[in-house]
Image: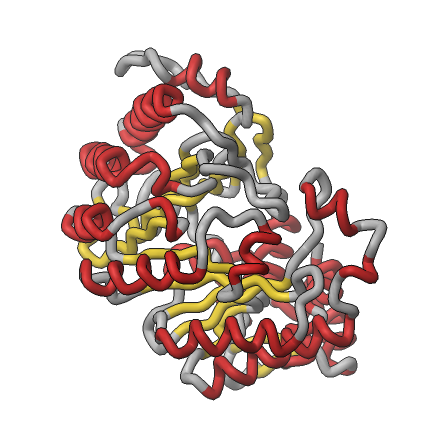
Amino acid sequence: MNKNGCNEMELYIHIPFCVQKCKYCDFLSMAADEATKERYVEALMNEIAFYGRQEEWEQGLETVYFGGGTPTVIGSRNLIRILDCVRSYFRIKEECEITIELNPATIDGEGLKELRLNGVNRLSIGLQSARNEELKLLGRIHSYEEFLKAFREARIAGFKNVNVDLISSLPGQRVEDYKESLQKVIWLGPEHISAYSLILEEGTPFYDSYVNHPELLPDEDTDREMYHLTKEMLKAAGYDRYEISNYAKSGFESKHNSGYWKRVPYLGTGLGASSFIGGKRWKNGTNLKEYLRNWEKINENTVFPGRLEEFYTLSRRDEMAEYLYLGLRMSRGVSIKGFERCFGKDLFDVYGKEIAKFKKEGLLVADEEKDRIYLTDFGMDVSNYVFERFV
């Protein structure tokens, strides 16, 4: 256990680049030339080295996660350089889950083999749809055929833990269209499937095109039908729904994302990355030029050179609320006794009224004998309504 009172640790590495921004995406991502990508890799490794030298974070890493953007646009060579840098400054546990997100059009079989040989053991492939007309509508740069090629090459390279992302309720999408995508992914048998319903995020082309034209999107009943179809088809295919939008074969739940929901401490490196250590949350600045300028030239004596856009210490009440609304995202919910161990208070003394209300409404189960509190299927359907009461 380290100074922050934790013996678990996760590392997130943000690669903000992509070939082109998808029309629905509000993530911190952008296109960039090769020179900028190279400068970013050097700055990022400097940031990783800076944190790695801090005594507070010297415990072994449970997970390493490369997200974006599209991490694979910087090439397998650079991804391996960054991973080698992590190994130089952090202890990576033998069972560490190392994930890289990828777009099927941004890596080939040789690149996948190199990643696997250098310790990457999990891939997350952004398919989104198995219908090429829908991929074009979304602004994706790949076709379904390119996804199939990438998936098969991942298997040849030796990856035995692969996630595939899907999005439902796309403009003009029918239930049978979405069902086709779901069936094709199930047939391939990835170990993990993340299935999300489209959300119109402000500032995206999709928001501008559809926020005032809801008639162009599937109606609420159709959206719910797709949502329930996902649960039914994946359950029948042997996927356990372990979180609101995530399904996995036994033993293949995402360790990294589960860590977020369990409030495992994590360090975020790279542009705009968030961290949670010792009851504190902070976020790196989001200006690329400033990030490069701050992190390109540092040495072992450099005091923190970066810029934080957010930094705050959670109150005890904040932490208790997080314990519930993050933990309740998972199908198994949270431990009643665990709450008391963490906070020295009885869960029902703090949230008894809310728990009684949701039990009465059929949204929540509190099983003291099994030491669990968790959402019912109906509670999962309206989870945001539940979470708002705990915030």
